[in-house]
Image 1 (spheres, helix red, strand yellow):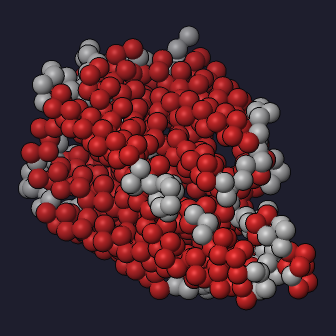
Image 2: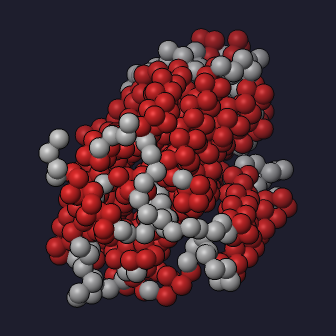
Image 3: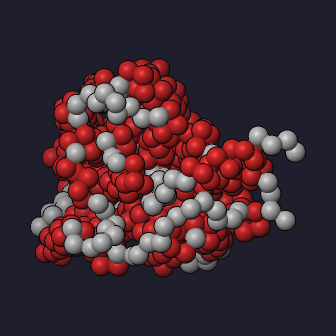
Amino acid sequence: MSEPPSSYKWIALSNTTLGVLMVMINQSIVLIALPDVFRGIHLNPLDPGNTGYLLWMMMGFMVVTAVLVVTFGRLGDMFGRVRMYNMGFAVFSVCSILLSVTWLEGSAGALWLIGWRIVQGIGGALLFANSTAILTDAFPSHQRGTALGINSIAGITGSFLGLVIGGVLAPVSWKAIFLVSVPFGVFGTIWAFVKLRDNGVRRPARMDWWGNATFAVGLIVLLVGITYGIQPYGTSVMGWANPWVLAALVGGVALLALFAWIETRVAEPLFRLSLFRSRAFLAGNIASLLTALGRGGLQFMLIIWLQGIWLPLHGYSFEETPLWAGIYMIPLTIGFLLSAPVSGWLSDRFGPRNFTVGGAIITAASFFALMALPTDFNYGVFALLILINGIGSGLFASPNRAEIMNSVPAESRGVGAGMTATFQNSSMVLSIGVFFSLMVAGLSHSLPPAMHDELVRQGVPDATAQGIAHLPPIAVLFAAFLGYNPFRELLDGVLGGLPDGGSRLTSKEFFPHLIAGPFHQGLVIAFWFAVAACLVAAVASVLTGPLRRGHRAAPHESLGSELAAVAGEAGIAVNELVVPDEDFDARRAEADNTPG
């Protein structure tokens, strides 16, 4: 027997919030737990061949989600949103089990984890693509904004909870970071299967197969090229001269250009390119993409800074650093959660442009201030700066998304939201490659002489010091990211002949102290890019123009757009092709107000 509408909408909200929370926790839990995962499967981060494993363990989930969200939204319209959502819950849960039971080690273990993380990303994309549409179907128009807000903020919270949960569980057992999702996933799968149902009115949709294929393959090939471009090639510290990398970059761009051509010639395109004729839509998306590029690599840089340098210098063991890195990054979350809902509410009354421009400038200023910090910073100042960064991001995000959505005709808002979410998700992945490339470029100039001089000062023979100093910078960067002092292994045949057995070289403070200066130089280069991206985003926000008179959104629409901005930050896409049915809303509202 089906639940009455007044009960069903809260069931839909609870279940979709659980699904989004679970996926976002799992997206970030691996990031903070990678040191324990690598130690658990006995993978050496200094082996150049293992760099790709580390990158794909971080990025594989996000790449799949970025590529498939819009496609799965269209499939939900064709075959049923609840059906696709249930499939996502089931796939995600099964993958969590398979990720936690591996007995493999080394490269085989890494490939097992990467493969199932990619499949798990497919489950996550199914959940993301259909959760918002399920809520849209379940809630009357005057309550949708509230429902989307609860669901979306849960997703943002999950992305940071994952850092703390991963830090707590990983030292106990790295497999626990995957196993923790299993009971929630199984419960959510059964609950969704029993209680959720497809309702609402949707028009039949046709799949743009050629558009989907060229977009997915083009974006994946482009991102693969970027991934291998930041790895060493021959005698070069990076692989941008690798013919395969160049072929992937050119091929990816060519396929995306072919995708754009296809979209102008099909009846029901995946992307509606005519929307870019609107100055507000074009400039708003450029601003959104640039701020995502500027902020996307921030979390990784801060984790390396905390986990690889600051925490060991302050006496924390490498086993403790994942937990405390997650805890010390909480102000970033607080800043975003404080400002995003408020800025959306205020922008509905005063227009979005001042908030988007101001938010982008504040974010740029916080990056500039972070550059001025020494690597061994005062935590109070650091916490204040990342709090300000979160506030700036929140001030920008909600009004920017509302401005974009208000520029789109009502019948195209689902498509427009899906396009914007895809741009944001893709740029977040792209930013990781950009930040790491800039970091490696900075390290490649300053790290070798710093390592050589310090090792010689500690009594290491010059020839040995020269060899170690020419380690690929990306390997040194990942050793810091994983909280790993490589000198016990690299100096295995030399330590016995050094004063005090080389205890200084193998201490937990030596490696962080050694790389702190070169790391800061690379960090400054990466943060200059972030400053420039955010300032250009501020200019693009000015070019959107003020919200036109008579075009102000209705209260529930503007709130929905505001909260969709938060959803976009979490990687949650608004589903496509939701056709409003005011009679259906009226009937549901009447049912909601009926006693009993």
